[in-house]
Image (cartoon, rainbow, N blue to C red):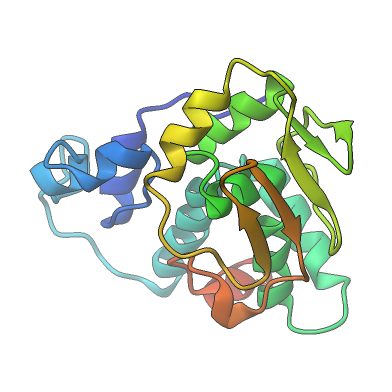
Length: 206
């Protein structure tokens, strides 16, 4: 599976804000953005020209890094979103939100998307009773997500639930049985991603 193995704290510093790529660490004083609030690299403290293209590109990179998606895959999501009825930007965010690795984070069953992907790849989760080991699997309304019986990852998942904030209204979670249900597709106001999707659409529309 192709994945980004670069330093995660540098990615947050490049975008100038916390993307919560490291789970609990991002909430402590060890967070890279807290320690060094300027972009990485030799010229990180220098002045940068803010062109329209640069603003749009940074927004696309921020969204891609937030969801842990590589460039080719992200563009594929955009193409799919543009062919759907409705607003392209909102369709794009809905597709990204419905990835199984993201859903586990939203439910509080994983501390970060990287941890979520690892749990999925190792076969610890099932959807509608069938084992799913594809992090990009698109969940649908009515899908029931459960942890595999007697899996050794149960304690890791329970530790992650302690960091859980509010569960999005389009999901329903049972932290006792470590199961959940997808109630419907997410609406734009329910997506907590720090992304201005219209800038991404403008970038790809050029």
